[in-house]
Image 1 (cartoon, rainbow, N blue to C red):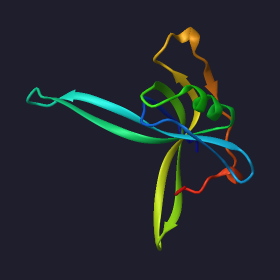
Image 2 (image 1 turned 90 degrees about the vertical axis):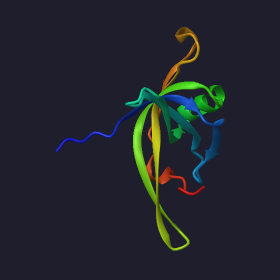
Image 3 (image 1 turned 120 degrees about the vertical axis):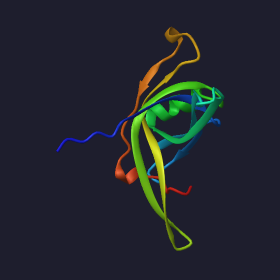
Image 4 (image 1 turned 60 degrees about the horizontal axis):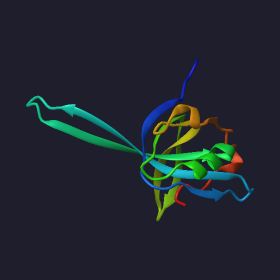
Length: 131
């Protein structure tokens, strides 16, 4: 049976990207992305809600994210959802994140900005979910 795990987001970075390395030396860049929704209620009142996503960008894409992105920057991201499980004080907790496969910066002229595709992280490259 076919399956699909793809997410596309346009939003603003919530903080500057942070670069880390796995025990095997692969680089991963992490940051949060805010995606806002606006609508009018039945009474005509303007409403807004923001969803936050945890993003991981691996390898060369992660290096580009670290170099060019900063808090507040508007970006398009495409990737896959991944949920990790970890134990915290005897409780099993779950952590859902987006593994970015493509990124494009949207808040400058398109000809100035690269559109970058990522390499896939392997199972060996997973970071601990609570780090």
